[in-house]
Image 1 (cartoon, protein in one colour):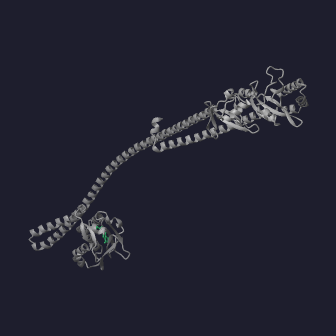
Image 2 (tube, rainbow, N blue to C red):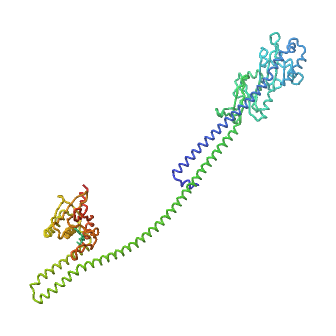
Length: 594
Ligand code: ADP
């Protein structure tokens, strides 16, 4: 895996990086949402619990609120305060009332603050005779007001909730009826339920708590004035009033506090009627555990996603390289096949070349044979004529007829000329393409040829019509050989028009773009249909024996081709043949650049 990651291209690595970042973001977001959801859930649970405990507390407190009122309104109690008789009856009445209501104690205090009667009159810890004049609930009660008070019992040292009510006789308070309620049972229930709760009074002193150690601890540092009031009212045991280590850590949704080194999520509510606050605490450990769990799951998920991505990438790369290997194999196979085909082709080519060579050899042999036949045929006749003339000359010499020798020798010369012409033609045919190429003016070549043939034209009474540009027409080639072509064409035209009355030869030169077209025409019989297009092949002739060897046009064809041109023949509609030569105009390099 490791090596394959580094073997990836930059693009692929960036892609994996982006994928990882996105996965991280997505999973983190999911984690945050889950934590948020969990916090909301915690808040909901805390609110529900708090409502439950608040209601239980209120119920507990209000359950007895009627009792001092009833005691204070009782005629038995009021009469007793006036006449002081029936004390025992009052005690029993209070005992029964307390028992029925399930309160801690119910008692009657006179106007000086001394307990006259009490529900626990017959107990060791009876309140009778106690001076409670310092108690705030007495002080307020004797002023004719109802009072609620929480504090530690004067005699019992047991904390309790006190509700007092004035006993009115003839419109003025003559005593105070008091009920004491024990709230310690609530604490036990909270504690047994595994909850962490406390109730703090308006002075920020914890009066009730599921944790006994927190009871009477303060949330703030108490002022001396407050301490004095507490002392005067004997409300709480002073040594216990120590500051609880309580500090907020996070506010907002987390709302986290640290109490005695422990972290809790706090939910607090104010109890208006008592001016108390009730706080419910949830341990943050489950929250941390949940967050840790979510984080771990997230990291595992991210790791898994990255591993899967890398694995898929690896597999993809393997597939690609396998595919490439397969393609490379295919290409190699194709290469091998191609090499084989090339070899095959080379072999075929070699065979073909050999066959061609053989054919050429055969063709050459055939041509040589053909030529040999033609030459033999051409030369046989003049040779036998020569033999005959030589024999006649010898006879004439024997007979001393020397005067007759001259005409016979003239004939011999004529025959020699003819034989020379044949060999000249053969030489021309055998000659290879000229290597002495140079620029020449077509007009000069035409004029030179016409000048050479002038005597012949006049002898045969042939008119020549010349249509040639006035400017220089440059061609590249062997001028001498080109002139040979023109001589050939003129001679053929003269031969074709032999015995004809009006003989005409025309030379027409025309420039077409970068080509020059030379037309040599006559008004003879035109090309014989029998030979027609084969006139340019060697040894094709319609001339009678001894006149033509059939090489002139094939030599011309070769010369024109060597000059990069073309030669062809057409019969004119008005009669006669027209030979066309199409040749490239020569442009000097510097001209061409202009
Ligand atoms: P040769 O002149 O020895 O016959 P050429 O190759 O020069 O050989 O000519 C081949 C043949 O082409 C001639 O025999 C003739 O039949 C035909 N030919 C050439 N020029 C003309 C022409 N101007 N008019 C008619 N036929 C021609």
